[in-house]
Image (cartoon, rainbow, N blue to C red; front, side, top):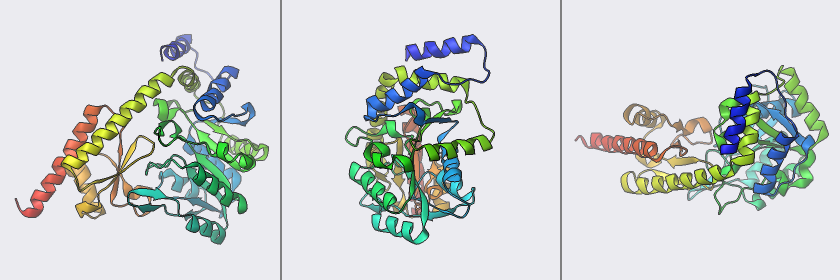
Length: 355
């Protein structure tokens, strides 16, 4: 990423950090990334920039539904999905993912029944799915599209983790699979997870339909937001233009961390089950065999192991016995964390035996 760093340094040295906007080369960099890595052709007019994907989800909920309307989510899911619905006065409807033998799937019968019964207006799709690590197959994405089209449901697809799908589970952009839904779909993307740029606050939201795009932009205007972080725009362009080799090396490191985690659990903490991820940089761990309730599991992780993980309860869907672990860290950090967890679990076992 030397060229990208040079561009960023040049912008810093320029010394003026007032309001800024993008030029054509920014749009080319963003569209080129999705064309080259996902085979998805976009149009410049589709692109709307926001400070973050969660902000975009909230704007979509406000723009495309009315207070009291039903919005569907599929938990266990990234917890802001709940708040952007509830905090905007919409009605949250949940179709819980079905887990069988460590594999999560959409319960399509329940999914469609909830849409019909609750008169759902909008579906928030998490693709790849955080925290369970599913990368939805083409047939699954197509079935989602068919159901939503049949019932007039708008789809907002959060694809912020698209760059972290494993090779054997390639990510497919929802609109690339369902181009006929261009007028009723928003695709939310950002370089923030991929290149660790979240604090620079830039995301790229693709809205092909003119009417939903205009409604979305009106909601942004109502919040008083205008130009994005000037350095965020520079960083995004630099990353998409020159960051592919770095990302490929990063993905290899993440795969190595996952392999290490899997082997460590088998050797030291066999009571904890890894839900094999197909993408993202998270590990979703089933701790139910530890025999602890929610409070005791929290005490084990925080007070005994001295770790700050994401408790499964915040993701909904009956995931109180799960913990989410971030694999995007140096190997020594991961090893230290897992060792502390293993020691805590072994200490718990000794305490139960009165040793």
